[in-house]
Image 1 (cartoon, protein in one colour):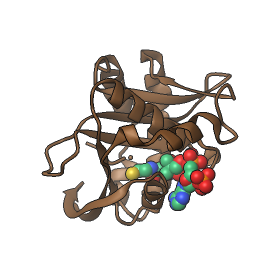
Image 2 (tube, rainbow, N blue to C red):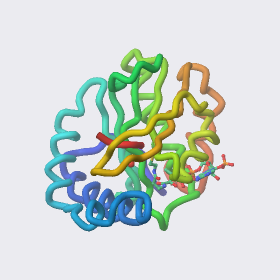
Image 3 (tube, rainbow, N blue to C red):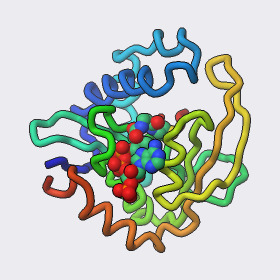
Image 4 (cartoon, rainbow, N blue to C red):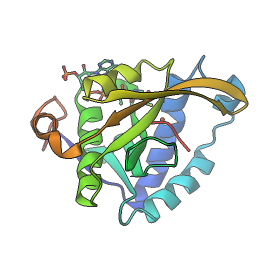
Amino acid sequence: MVEIRQARIGDAGPVAELHVATWRAVYAGMLPDHVLLGLSSAAERSYWRRAIGSGAGLCSVHVAAAQDGEILGYGSAGPARPNGLPFEAEIYTLYVAPDHHERGLGRRLLHAMFDHLRDHGRDSAMLWVLAANPARFFYGAMGGTLAARRRERHFGAELDEEAYGWGDLNGLAGAREKARHGGAGGPGGPGGNA
Ligand SMILES: CC(C)(COP(=O)(O)OP(=O)(O)OC[C@H]1O[C@@H](n2cnc3c(N)ncnc32)[C@H](O)[C@@H]1OP(=O)(O)O)[C@@H](O)C(=O)NCCC(=O)NCCS
């Protein structure tokens, strides 16, 4: 029984801890070691307090919360940062705790963010993912299409990235139904890269 909901200020600490843990797990070998070792839950907590606190309107932070309150995943979204691509909105982050992968939580979080963006008048969305990150296949599985490639300097390293885009968030009705009803974690039941 996992609930997908908008984050509250009290979620900032658990989201920060999950952020540090997932970054260290996902990006080992992709990002420089000193970046991963230097991550601080305290600094992340202030960042997420601000992000959640300013989350009214188009910008949002969503969490996947277990019945006992444990935060199992999170995602954030808002207006697309300028990049020359024809998408109105951007998924900035999407992370699910490694022990809870493949339970449908990533899909549910992504669709909760899509719904929020649609509710705020945005019909298209995109995200950036490191080209070395196998999570890019997840975005393909979620109906995203490869929209661009670029090489960017992050944390002192040149990194290849791919953009995945959804040109019509209104046309995702079938996928949205699956997000509502699919997966063991079903209802009732990442300047960042997504
Ligand atoms: C990518 C991520 C968010 C997916 O979340 P998840 O909860 O494990 O995914 P779900 O269970 O919702 O998967 C939905 C579908 O996508 C598929 N899928 C999940 N991860 C996949 C992957 N890496 N490659 C291909 N398909 C994938 C699932 O098999 C499932 O398929 P189905 O439609 O046949 O049921 C999660 O694996 C994660 O947090 N990864 C580490 C962090 C990360 O890299 N985030 C992205 C940064 S850009």
